[in-house]
Image 1: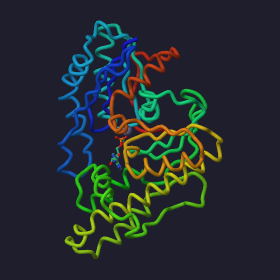
Image 2: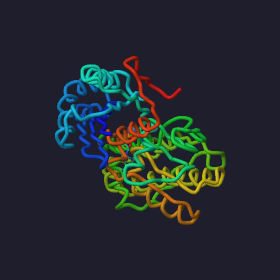
Image 3: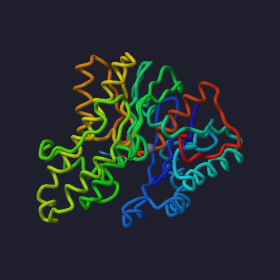
Image 4: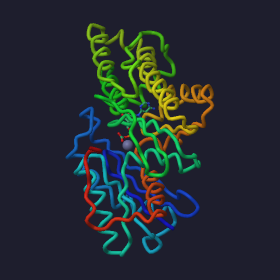
Length: 328
Ligand code: KG4
Ligand code: ZN
């Protein structure tokens, strides 16, 4: 089965082709228009999707050495995400589906982050996924494909949001997560002790206290001082975030008894989180998977692989498919 996948939930327009041989293309057009605003402007995002979507899909088909004549299903992100952005992808997918009589499959973006791990590996169920992105931070107990139970989530900011907001205070460009990661590699994680919230309590997370603590810590510091200690501050912030994430993941493993754990979402590209997770997995004797870096942040390959799993289970949608903004 050949699948064309489209992802447009936030500020990346992406298209991918999946065949029986695996992922053949994964084109990502990132929107630079938001840089000047230090965050994503929803209306500008949907307009930029509209401008690039045709070309992105065409390129994915070309690179995948196929054409619409050989596509058996179109998978498209249904939500969560920005409604205007999602609408562009969904309307485009519906147009193709209708004109070419190709079945449509709506895909949940957060599920897709989890199943990005199945592009290059075959993780065994049951498993626990730590899904950390710009908008979500969740621990998900997955007993079998699509049988998901959220056993922990953030009560306020997402981990990626914490990276982005603290990075903004440090003068780093949006999204700040990858920049903080780069600086953190050269810094001392013990330079400053930032708070790690809710460590003693269950599986929920909270990152807004860390953000406030960083704000107070930085407010009376000179720009030059921040610049001089940028690597150390980034390392200390990354340490606080990664420690909490891995400690909670460890608790989730103990609670559920799973032998497989997955990292998922944009923040799963973070090197400190990956290193700490590897160590923890060895200690706990569980099998750990994380997607390759290009499949961590938003991409259509993860939509394609999830669409394929849904197709295999006979889960198709019709033209009534509507986007949804949030998970609840
Ligand atoms: O999954 P994603 O691409 O989009 C959402 O669904 O939100 O995640 C984006 C988030 C941003 O907050 C970005 O700063 C963060 O992932 N991120 C990172 C790294 N790469 C991306 N955070 C820390 N370290 C990284 N290497
Ligand atoms: Zn995402």
